[in-house]
Length: 559
Image (tube, one colour):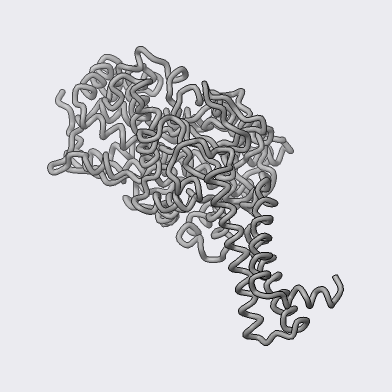
């Protein structure tokens, strides 16, 4: 463009300038629609600043504007551009988007800011989604390109072993690069399958035999400490929410990194764990807008208290790397991952960043989830004495001489698993749906076609309480699992398929060990003044649930 034409464009009257900028905003929106911009926001912000500086400088140097006039015209261009951009976004999302026919709150159709506002209200987003399904039906639009599907037939289509759906950008909050992510955040299916092999070896019985140290040994040590704390209370109230958390973090510290957090012995929350938990409410709110978490995560100091947990895991990993050799038998999960790395195994984390993320994943994924399941099970046992008595009847037959006859091998009996399954059904530790992206050709769920490039999820808490799939869905009824199978039911606390939970068997082991030992030795009841109502109704959805305190009494059983 010649200098004369540039000057003429810069000197255009205000209405022409505004109209041009508005049109550019509309064009810009439609040019970026096919692009995943979640991780390009800082780049776009930088380009915007640079263009504004160029425009301001050109107005002053080429068009003869004074500073004040140049600032005013630059502001006009920005305002008009943004009106065009956001106006186009709003009109498109409400009336022309491929999902415009799906019902849902109009705010959700416009922006994920709606979800952020709902989550910020009481940090119970998963439970708000349940209300939306009651209002709008099985298919609800909860974001500009996101559909929540409360239909059992969607489970296999979205999460099943043959599903083509990949994880959404929700999982890329650390990085969009799989080489810098933990296993759970790896979106590429082939990469996930490859890395999962090392984890499966670490969690397998074969791996235990090779290491010569069964994981039951780690669990039993923590189990004994947990029981000693119950005994020390002598029937006085105990906050099971807190002590279940101490137990599971100590187990995962030992099983995962080879060093427990010593919370059961110190009787207090470890500083690193407290740093993690102090961060959870923010995660519960901000995770509704994954791109915002990514943006904030790049700002120094924003991580705040989470840094204590980050640093602890990093330090433990460095210590492991110093003391672990290629020929050494792995004695914990991180050692199995290091062994794969030293042997050049393709299942190893692909780099130091990925190894670091896996070291944190070991603790996060296996601790709060199992702690919630454990505390929730004790809540149901206290609330349903006949269930506890029936469980104790089975235990008495298996262990006629009490604790002396107890062994983990005896604890894999159906009724105990039915109690655990029923707890996980009514109170899943991860209540929200796990988001996936439909392939370009879309997917068909019964009579409904879901277009390609749509984020979909089955809301775990909602579908597991649906009366179409469970009789008396709100009743705690372990016997229902005598008639139905977890694999064939609307039951997804561990999800399914390629991305299913690697630590499922370890979690079940922890639950069986603690519940069986406690029920064998103690009666469980609500403490005086405790009725469990707040525990039941004031749960927060912080990706995993954050539970209120629950005070229970553990009274030694009479011979």
